[in-house]
Image 1 (tube, helix red, strand yellow):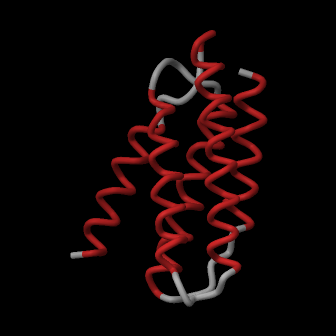
Image 2: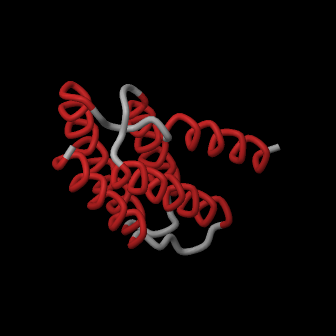
Image 3: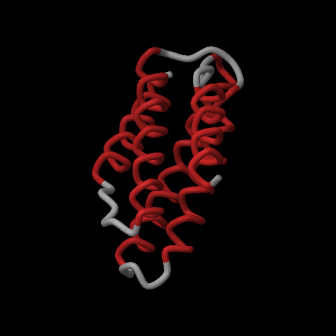
Length: 124
């Protein structure tokens, strides 16, 4: 049940993310969301650094990250933004899968994709 729910949520997130940043108001929204995403990544990093004692904080940070990414659904998008959003979605999904399995969470792909999103949103 949990695997099916995770797969459904991931598919819905991926679909929503395909229409990321663009347009003048999209640039502002994209930049704001990218800033929020970076905050989510910091929260996730802090939760993972605490070890496996409380994975709930990491799960909460991942959920907030996905909610912020959902905001990137208005307007058109650049190919760089689309790639960054897809990469970040995949990295977050992989981190959640590791967390669910009790495995160490590799945050490098999350951090890299968040940086790419910030860069692409700034360029618009």
